[in-house]
Length: 372
Figure 1 (tube, rainbow, N blue to C red):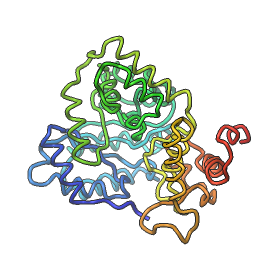
Figure 2 (figure 1 turned 180 degrees about the vertical axis):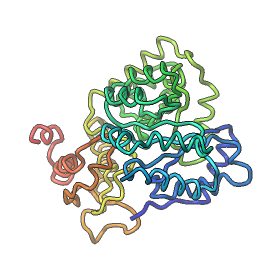
Figure 3 (figure 1 turned 30 degrees about the horizontal axis):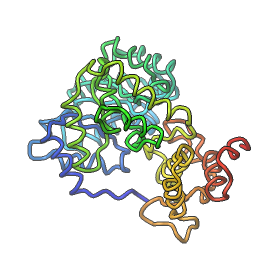
Figure 4 (figure 1 turned 45 degrees about the horizontal axis):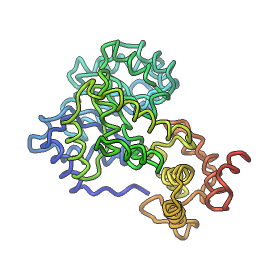
């Protein structure tokens, strides 16, 4: 059940973004089940390839031997009709991937690719703990690293300490999940009240982006943008940014907003969608987003809306959409296929049982978490 992609709309958005000044394009072979690299290839015709820094990733989780590195990298070069990648990353590095990196001498393969002109800069994207992050950083003289980081996720995965550690090694640090899968763009009421009370006129998205651009260790901020309005707003935010531009009052406001999210961290899902498609048709990220939103929301209207959204999802195989995952938690069969795909190491089937108990069976969320 592949996710549908509007090719023409995507190409227009990419080109408009480049025309606006965006010059760093990140993709991977697994994004949108292969469609992402194909679309970017089409968008970068007519001289657009020369205007950007092109980044994609080696799917280390698919590598079974040393030769697989060349197999996948050559396939990607051919697929995107380019003779080199400006940056090539080992995708979603963690402790097991580090072992594979060493076992198959994949760094030697990457260095060879650089000598052959197929790769300019070498790096990795990361999903694991701080000790593992430092181990990987110390393994090689990397050019760049891509980490999950935002004002809420500064204490998990690479953490602020890891951000500074990588920068101290001379590595360019690229930030993914700056809006935590969109959650920081749509704050719960308590966080929204904090934003509204300040005299500083700034949208929730702008607060999140300015937090990152304020940091000297941050080189690039990756933000997924689904339409031209988002692209324009993000570019305008970047134009207003500067290292060290936030004052103490603004930093305190961000800390208060972050604390709202952190005191209610039910399910640490970022909606990366790596877990999709679910063989049973469950829309895993949407189930988790609804559960998280209901837990922190106080507005009766919004609570009703979230519960309505859950009820709209398919609760039987006969109601499933053949083109996309639209099932609720009741359809999970505990197959476990999603477990190895999740970069947050969430026990997805276990969490879906909780969602089912709360949203399908009507139990109180706090009681569910006490029972489980």
